Length: 237
Image (cartoon, rainbow, N blue to C red; front, top):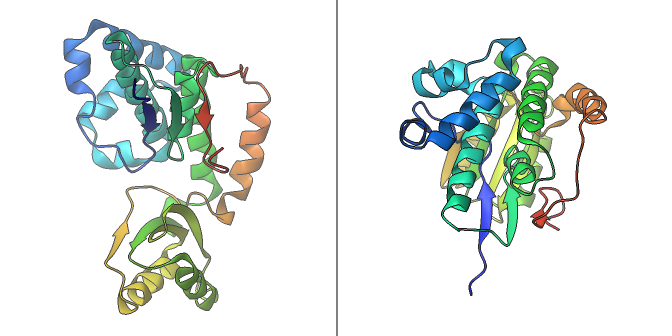
């Protein structure tokens, strides 16, 4: 029998209307959505309303995008399991690793919803949204992009954030530096330079305070041994 891997999406994958058809057609999906809202009742967050009605800027805001994506991802996972589709291994792209941890029973769903909400708060407060963002550069190799980042450090911080493939690299940093890097990458022959739908410069040194705060919060979260193997973001192991 062929083995199946589930890879859960990260930020930037959100869109208005995501999950609405599932909530309308599957009672268990509605139950999970209600559980997510209950977990965030102190914050008065309505994940369904944010997902289905937006506005887009509200959904894009990392404090909302993170619990929204995790919730819809978990709903999809539970529906697949209901239909006897079971993964041999799980993984996630950035934020998606938290969905993978829920799928593997390493973290309880409600705990994960609260955790990624806090993660979003810490990441957003680490730097004002207007000062930073992220770009995907397609068609150039890592070394070339790294050299360009070094050349424009006098303009602002910009760093390699994700290695999606040998020629699909995500960079993160301050807006002015990203704008300059975008021009340089196109001049160097990049096939595409794509601004990501995120609200801050994630996976960069600008997130230093978020790292400290999240580590402190994680001390309170119960983490179990996973029941399904997980391939991690950092090591791929």
